[in-house]
Image (tube, rainbow, N blue to C red; front, side, top):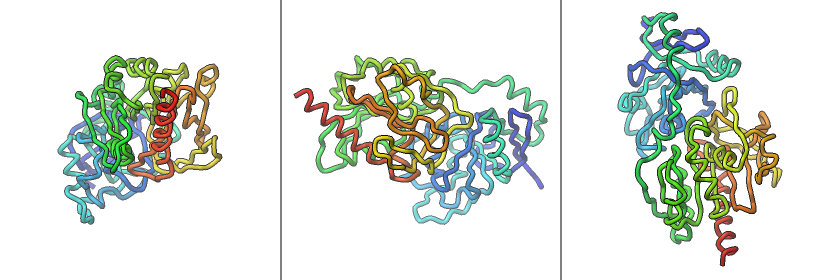
Length: 366
């Protein structure tokens, strides 16, 4: 076969395939996602910055790209690795092909590789660096390139918006104003709050408490985002200074940041949680939620001891912490994505819980 792309892993393995999207060479951290649908939302989720995502579902591209389904205006995912790519989508909502969008944003892709084997390697050996290049790159050249290249640690500053943006509520009645700290926020989070009567002011990642409080927020939201939460000490310090002054809700990276701000610790998982089918137990209700997840880091269970936080949710696959709260400070967070996009809707109630906290906080101050 006339292969025109190659994937070289940090462990010395090579995979030959065919290119789609940009033909640029790129080194990323390779991870996998088990979602059966939602490749457009995955492509445009800022949390995948500097990552090459292997899709476990074999057919990608078959329903094209719809204008309404982007999670950010400028996708920053590192690369896509798929088993079979379809460039003739069948979907009345489709405006472009996945290939054309990836070309537009310089995102390389490779298809025709054995993604089942590749995903097993990631599962067994953990996330690692990967090099998407041309077949004439030798293994020795590729390994040398990988050994000399470090994955950047500035992902949050790269994907966060640079200016304050206001999104008015779309519900009939407007009752609350939330300031959202953008660490790489998905747009469906804003839509979910707007639909519940919340005006949302989105601020850059490095906005300080002194700049946030004059905006008179009823609540603070800490968004999802890419990378290691300890790489953004500025956000941790801002959140620490806001605790107790206003209700706080964090998801994904925001969950880790809230935990760190309260004195807990985080660590990197072997291959992370990425997919739309992760079972999570709500320890307060004993109910099971099927959740959408995308993260490499988790909150250390033992480190919660001695902090104001208590665990509220656990992952039933590996018993990692999936939610924490400090009721006295009207603050809580979850490791997963209640806004989904893509994924199940089991956890949408968390936005309503945030509203209840803001209402309780208002009454406590009146």
